[in-house]
Structure formats: C-alpha cells, structure tokens
Length: 210
Image (cartoon, rainbow, N blue to C red; front, side):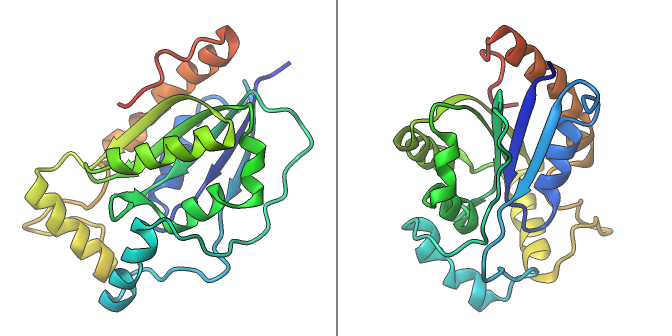
C-alpha cells in the first residue's frame, strides 16, 4: 500500500504552496497526497496596507485566533501529516494559529507531524510556539524543514518590505528577488524521497531544518 500523506497549509503569497508542491513533485506515483488549505473566513489582504499589517501584530504575538472556513477530511488513515506555515511577527501566522486552536486540529492527535516553514531568517520563535501547540494537541513532531531567504539581513528586510506593501517579488536593477530563492524552492524536491523513506522505515531523524 502506498504511504498516505495529508498536507495542511496556509500560504498568503503562494510561495509556501510552491515549496510544498516542489517537495513532493517527484513522488506522485509513490504516495497518496491530500492537500488542504487553511482559509480565514475574513481573508487577509495582499499586498498589505501599513494599517492592516500592523493591526495584525497584537493578535499574532498573543496568538489570538480568528474564524477559519470548515476543513473536511477524508476517512483514510494518514502515515504523516505535513503542516506548512509562515511566521508573522515572530509567531505563527494568524490563520495557521487559528487552525491549531480550532476543532479541526484534533486530527493531529497521535499523528506523526512534519512542519515546513517558508520565511525570512527569523522563524525559531514561531516554531517554538508551534511545538508547544502540537504537544498540547498530542501530536508527534518528527521533523522540521525550513526554507529561508538567503540574502543578507538588510537586503532581505528591504525586499520583503517591497513585496509586502507593493506586491513586487521580482528582482529589480538594484535589489534581488524577495523571499526564498527559486533555486532553493526547485531543489526542495530532494526531500520527497527522504520523507517517504522515513515513513517506510519509521525513522524521521533526517527531517530537520535545511
């Protein structure tokens, strides 16, 4: 029987969805994958305005949840659940945190869970908060894959501001592309076989940050 994987994610810009698609791009014939998107009842805008962006800071930091649309699961038993998210203000994004605090997160109980993060270089605090939520839910966190913007810190600050408020991810004459580099997204497919091997052998020791 093929391994069965459930992916639950929130991707405001589409970058994290691209990462998740790439990870399993070579494994579609080797496993069954169900993909479910977390959708806030009240969607967050993109690009952001400064008002809406900073208005989200308290709720993000304090991990205050908002309503999300219903999530309908298959009746199948999954060998692994993959959770994809981004940090907002050094915390899990509001939609992802809202999922973790919703009734839909009960599916994580007694399940092997792999987290996948797409972010700048400041993700550790968000992951610590996520780990605490997963412990409270009775999930078994088996690994974490992190994909970051590898540009120097000052450069990445400038490009993420441009992307966040102007919606411009593409490189300009003086500044590189914002976000996780295309090469790293394309090469994320190297993890697909490692994940399937981990499921088959029940050894997840290789699934940590990139």
